Length: 87
Image (tube, rainbow, N blue to C red; front, side):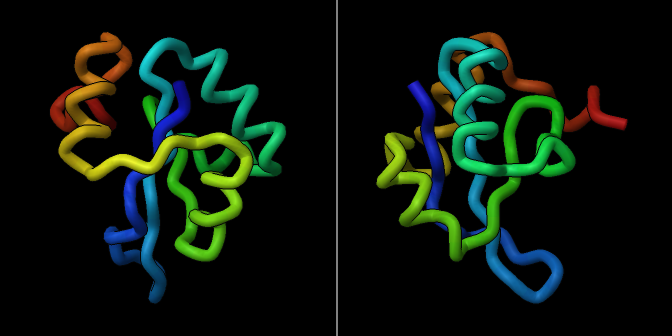
């Protein structure tokens, strides 16, 4: 399932959401490609997406969840890359 959290994360003078899969990176990449999200938006286990794309992603099938639920589901999937393991 593709999940998206609310646009709460400030960066570059806008708010951002995280787009993840709770089952596979293949599923995540396929959804992102269908949604026209560029590969450069991928950050090891999620895509960063600007707030103006949120409603569109939900309309395309991403399930809106809170940030804590998104992280919980990402960890449970085994796809989470911990902060200390990032470059």
